[in-house]
Amino acid sequence: MNFLEQRIMKDGVVKEGNVLKVDSFLNHQMDVSLMNEIGKEFHRRFADRPVTKVLTIEASGIAIAYAVANEFNVPMVFAKKSKSINLEGEMYVAEVESFTHKNRNNVIVSKKFLNADDHVLIVDDFLANGCALQGLISITESAGATVEGLGIAIEKGFQIGGRVIRNLGYRLESLAIVDAMDHTTGNITFRKQ
Amino acid sequence: MNFLEQRIMKDGVVKEGNVLKVDSFLNHQMDVSLMNEIGKEFHRRFADRPVTKVLTIEASGIAIAYAVANEFNVPMVFAKKSKSINLEGEMYVAEVESFTHKNRNNVIVSKKFLNADDHVLIVDDFLANGCALQGLISITESAGATVEGLGIAIEKGFQIGGRVIRNLGYRLESLAIVDAMDHTTGNITFRKQ
Image 1 (spheres, rainbow over the protein chains, first blue to last red):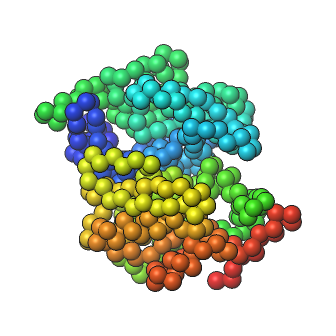
Image 2 (image 1 turned 90 degrees about the vertical axis):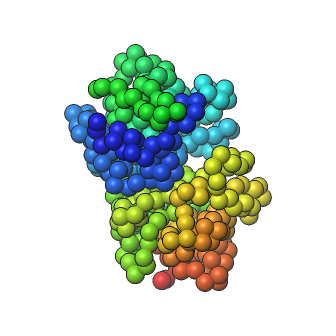
């Protein structure tokens, strides 16, 4: 097991309905040392790519994007979620439909901060059905920029998001892929990578 | 002028209606080196305080909180904004009314992540009328924890938030206090500190 899988085993909580709570260290309270380690690990895995910008979506992706951008020494950009589109200034907008909640959200990035010269590493804390990631890919492509890869802390391997993105030909690295969880025992099965 | 004031002069844009756009380096695209410097500066200013936790509110506060928590080597917690209260688990909730938008929002933190032993440094990117900060103070006090201070990147000195918080006796440090802006000339007047 790698450092993140070990931490999930130690402090993650499995709840009914395939819910994995990691809010004590990843997405409500944040362990900054762990974030730094995640940043270093993604830097190691994507060291061969000419990354010019790290892109994520608010809110919990911001800390991971910060850690990764710090290692690459490039700016980070976070996309905003909005029901309505504020057209003040020109924005890239991707409308994404949530598989889980069935609602629609706009994912928005100002055109000032992504352009055709950019080589983008997209990162986020969680990947389940991948709606948010699809929006970030769509926005990057709209800008004419290159998606150099996607880095995810925790992928739910039993949901569809990871497979879709790999099928589309993108390089997706997930630090921990959860293939199964049992809330009665608390057991978590990680995919061997 | 300090490093942040210099950066605001260089890359900030003054718009009509006392709007200061700093989205190219602080709250949409983020300059990670600048964030690191902000983290070091707040660590220097609050070095005499026994900080155990850094608290902020989603979304743009997260990067600053990360940088500050990294310097203090303590966890960070970000409060969530919500129209509705999800009571799954016990939450500290502060209802804050926006002075600007007149709407109400709940500021929410899980009770697991703040307790009476905590010494909290509250940070955020902007302070105008201070509604969000008032919510974060209220939540910290509800937890029985100690507010050790508040660190703000940019304070709008011509709005009421900073004065209210200082009048209440809290130690508030703002790296840049904008006392006046002129969108016709682009001129920005910083308060001498």
